[in-house]
Image (cartoon, rainbow, N blue to C red; front, side):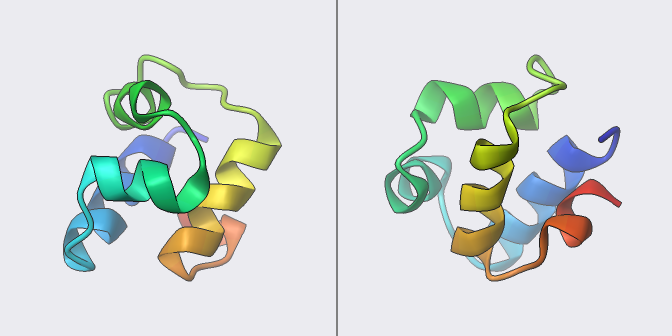
Length: 65
């Protein structure tokens, strides 16, 4: 999942979604979103990744490639 942090940030920004809005769309804490994008949390729960992928409208594979 080495590119997860880059892909989340890139897709989020391309769609004009703030970290706060992504947090609300996914029901994942803002702190978790920030830590994922900064690669402070390099191994998130699969459920968290599923929620983020769903909110961004992409497959999980697109986030972790």
